[in-house]
Length: 384
Ligand SMILES: *Cc1c(COP(=O)(O)O)cnc(C)c1O
Image (cartoon, rainbow, N blue to C red; front, side, top):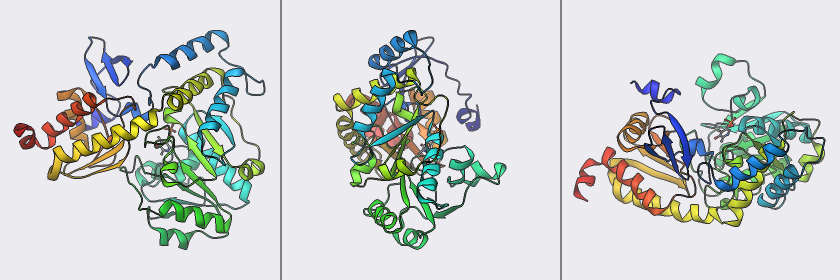
């Protein structure tokens, strides 16, 4: 098996069922899902509250278009708007992260009447033409050019470069509060505040892509709350329906008021709405973000203590953790899976990305630390 096979969707592990942070093959082998299947299952796999809500809804009404009021959509809408930071008072549902960002950029353009979009190096915003244009990596873009948009890239985390780029012709500044795909990059303190000040001064929309950072992962419902900065537009998807395909864009009133027509057939369908309502209300009522903060501190401290100089850095916030290795991350991810039954994701060449479901406990965190120690710091592992 080559590394390429392992990352391209032909992993030699057939998953049949999931429960909590675990996935199981047909023969019952248990895998700890330390990537939460791309951060899509914050409550763990097949969480009963979500399963029940979806089963009930799919049997009652699978679909009706969004021009008819449906209780599950109204519940999802109310739960999401209540869970977003004050100031983001309306929301629009879609089907994925890229579609949420696509809408965010369109809303920003129509509300400001400007066209320039400022994005950051090492960003990832999705793979449709507009979101892709705001995504950094050439490998994702080159075969499909020309892309949609008038996008200028600035170095992520550099306030001065951002200040030099934002002007009166700027429609939007789009940033991940912590970059996920790009390697779990945490910006310096003050960077997101500066982005807020600059966009306030020029009238541009500040868009935070919380597709990966949101839904409680960093220890608050949204990573922007960790920094105390409210954007004009916040996008979410991945964990929003705990595994069902759904995204959303939450916006301030001035964006909603200026938004020209945009819609999608499946926007806020009854079944995904039932999943959103169950997921958001369970996260909030059972206070899983606080648990993520606690487990994130524990896991980060244990990783730092166990791995020491065998790795370059352990970074992130809450349960959004990147381990910068001194070797290729694909290989380490493969060894974790094949030798330790732990599933994790690479983020770039040398960063191993840990995004476990928020429901993991200390024993599961220890399992992860022990396995990673055995792979990257075998001497330390033999001593303990
Ligand atoms: C995954 C991701 C996206 C794209 O989401 P899709 O649902 O795959 O379209 C956008 N932004 C960020 C930060 C992501 O992590």
